[in-house]
Length: 184
Figure 1 (cartoon, rainbow, N blue to C red):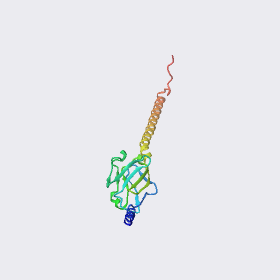
Figure 2 (tube, rainbow, N blue to C red; figure 1 turned 30 degrees about the vertical axis):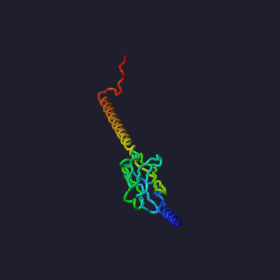
Figure 3 (cartoon, rainbow, N blue to C red; figure 1 turned 45 degrees about the vertical axis):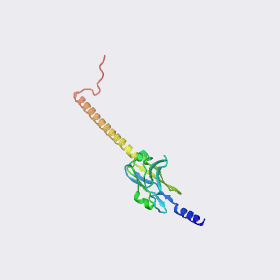
Figure 4 (cartoon, rainbow, N blue to C red; figure 1 turned 45 degrees about the horizontal axis):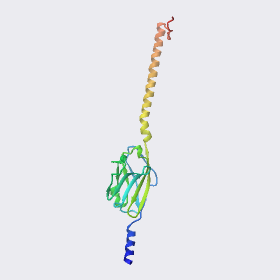
């Protein structure tokens, strides 16, 4: 019985409890940039044997999953295929950072880093704010508006110049600038 209790105690010590820690503040990035979503285990421990999932909070769908020592892509959201990478070099020291390449406006929002082993579970949230989404879409609209205004001013100037020229020509010829309609 004593050896069983000793074995049980060793099992409990072996199933390490951990906390998953995020940055504690929102991250800011721009459309088109790459960004690293930081996350780590506390206390620092080897995470290579753990199941690590990065999830979009709003959609509860998988952005990136790592399990059994490798990335698992079959459940990954289509929008993130080929755009995410877990920092494998940091896993041995409990670093769970996720890189997202080529940020899109739709990437803005809350991400959850979840970690699980047979006995423990933890999660941390990371808020990502993506700037440029509004400016990128309105940039083309602003350019079109500027072109429209410039063309309108040019047309007004040309029309005014032509009218002035016609008025001067009419005076020289002694004609009325505003001709009267023919009488019946």
